[in-house]
Length: 236
Image (cartoon, rainbow, N blue to C red; front, side, top):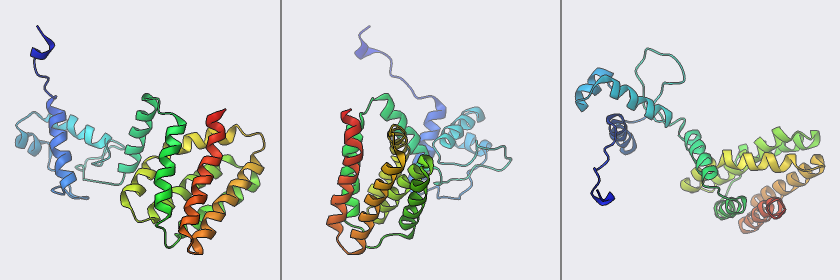
């Protein structure tokens, strides 16, 4: 039989139910904090067995859309948005690795997003300044782990401060991928204290430019900072 005339594949019932519930959550019919109906009620609504409903809920829990799965509880799952960013970050990291997305491509994407975001920052958030303090202490101690965590938070904080919700979300979702590359690159430097100190200087220069109202200058500094750190790594 020709592949064009092969039977049409049907989604398992659990995935179809998960898809319908997901759509209800996305459009707001099921708002954050709302307790879902019981398994019996959902099974009756969809005309399926409770096992299909239970599996659909597991799918939604794995996607960070409803509570549960992380602990044993007798309470019904509730709609949540709290874990969406971390769930999306995990999915993106996997997709990037499976698709073998190169570091130069990721750097180019960061440059596009963060340059645009920084040009729109009118007030530097307190969280961004706190990251600077943490990075300076970590740099003086040669603490790569503490530095890279604060570094990623610095960039995520500024991305959100730009006011474009989409850019802020994408940069936050990229957090895990950025952190992985950053940790590896920092660990390969023979003199971490001097490298970290120089990176601190670059971060502080970005904030200084923003404080003076020079957003375009700050954006240029962000581009130079990202490319200056990663391009030698990508060319090696």
